[in-house]
Amino acid sequence: MQFKSFIDSDIEDFRKLNIGIVDNSKEELVRKIQEKFGIKNEVVGLMDDINILLGKKTKVGFAFETENLEKKIKRLNKRKLEAVKIKLFESNSFLSEMKRELEKKLSEGDDK
Image (cartoon, rainbow, N blue to C red; front, side, top):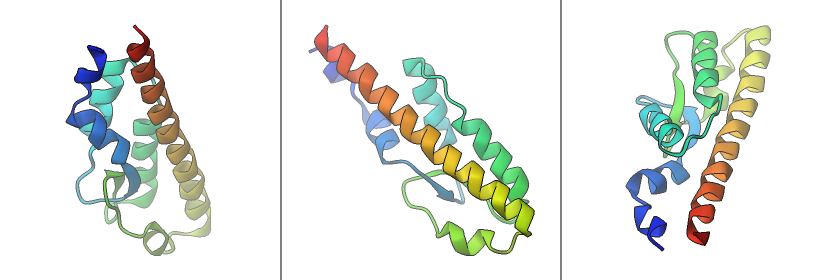
């Protein structure tokens, strides 16, 4: 029961995160959850890779509401576009995996 009271706004905010075009990424929240719960994940590194491919004008990151990604990335050449799409798919998968891992750790805490 004690662990339940530990659920704070960081966890609630993390559950709402999506990946997309952002002005300010909530990357620090993702890193905080990774550290707090010992969840190892490659999603932050993938965001860096995607941003390198996109260049300086467009930034992909973590946010509660995001802009339409398809419109922004269509301007890339075909090779970069495919690489970005694959990395976005992977990053969404990693973020989902991280959320599942968090829920698993939270539910294990309830059993104690």
